[in-house]
Image 1 (cartoon, rainbow, N blue to C red):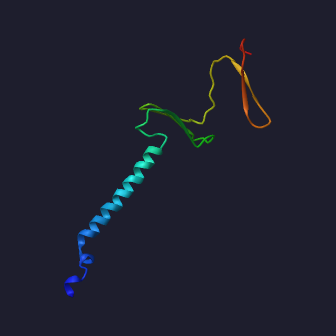
Image 2 (spheres, rainbow, N blue to C red):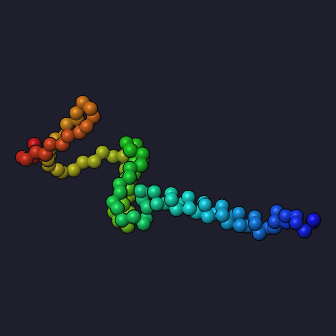
Image 3 (cartoon, helix red, strand yellow):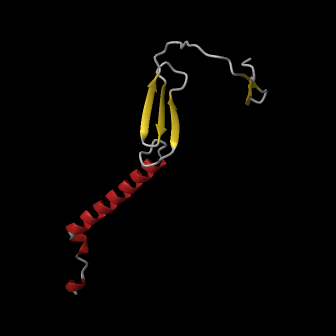
Length: 105
């Protein structure tokens, strides 16, 4: 009854097939991670991400379609010319309300 013995356990090809299955699972997981990334190169949406908000090394990344723009904080206080266009109030529950001013005040 030796011819009925299972010789599949000694077949080296089965190990290679198991490795291929493992690599397919890893590739599928990586594809899901790429699709869920907000800076996904395949999406056409507009996304803004802020890294290290409030820190001196803060970076802002803006993705508009396929165009990717990065802004690096220099740590200096900005200054410029401008006109006041409204006022913002913080409510007791933390919400912000913006009231545009008709005369710039």
